[in-house]
Amino acid sequence: MNMNIKELALRELQSIIESWGYKKFAAAQIFSWVYKKGIEDFNAMSNLPVPLREKLKERFYLSDAVVAEKLVSRDGTQKILFRLKDGNYIESALIPAEGRVTGCVSSQVGCKYACAFCASGLSGFKRDLSCGEIIDEVFLLKKNSPEQKLTHLVFMGTGEPLDNYDNVLKAIRIINSPEAFHIGARRITISTSGLIPEIKRLSGEGLQIELSVSLHAADDSVRTKIMPVNKKYSLKDLRAACRDYINKTNRQITFEYILIKGVNADLRDAEKLCTLIRGLNAKVNLILSNKVPECGFEPPDKKTTAAFKNTLADGGIQVTVRASRGEDIQAACGQLRLRHEQK
Ligand code: SAH
Image (cartoon, rainbow, N blue to C red; front, side, top):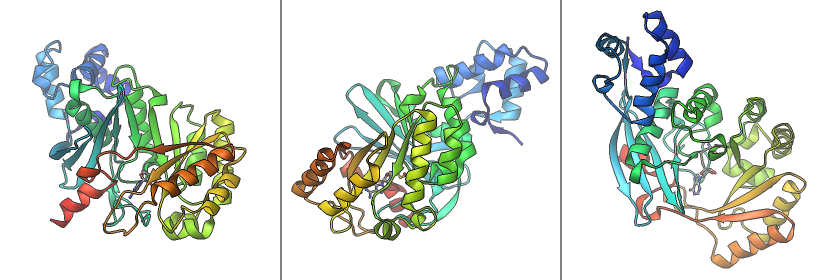
């Protein structure tokens, strides 16, 4: 059976090419056609011997995903729905801002974690994405970006990236490599709902990637209500895992905190958050909850948001408020796919 060529790291492709009796240099040429030039046809790889192109066609294909739908927001944000080979759908986003273009990618079809505010888990978990499918997302995002520019990548689409650890890490290493997209590790963010064993494992990878932890509450009872994963990994243990990660990698962590009216946005919540984070090399990114009608959550008003932010800042915590993007095109996690499945 043939396979998606994006499943392979350069050295894996080199050994296959060598086993066919060709110079391993051809693998770098193929990478350059695929990743640098964005070519989607083996016939177009004109510097490869014709028999090698034929052999590649027999053994590989070039993509698992096609663009099924594309929405473009007034602010330039694009939301793209991809159809995979098995008929499943995933969604990704392109977010342009001040000299950068960030791709937001999914790591799984659906999600197991059922966070109360998130549209991704509403229709359950289907399966992991393969490394090749993740790279296809990045490839197609780049193609759809104005001037094919893609500078940053965040694993903040559907799914829990650390629950698909091996495929996500392999994809990141390929995406990061000079022969492929060469997106710097510091420009790649993994966002996790807080899987402690995998955070520990990640700290030993020797990668300079950014880690975001979706906190969303500084109190176990509130967090358990909105993030069932908290039953398994409590805040105390999660804090310790983050501290160890920071110490081992010497990197700052970002805590994501969605402000939800009446749930976690009072000043007392802000004070608890200060206490939890104090002493860690970490910053807080406040997110105004997107309205997902199925979830019934709303963001607090501007005054409450400002007061929450000021309480953190006064408590010595580095804090930013994330600007909401693409609101007119259902760009919150999982919303487009959900609409599609409900059709
Ligand atoms: N499973 C991972 C990555 C996917 S979610 C994680 O939990 O981090 C990526 C980010 O989008 C998380 O911080 C998540 O909490 C946030 N998010 C999900 N639903 C949202 C909503 N309705 N409004 C705002 N942010 C949301």
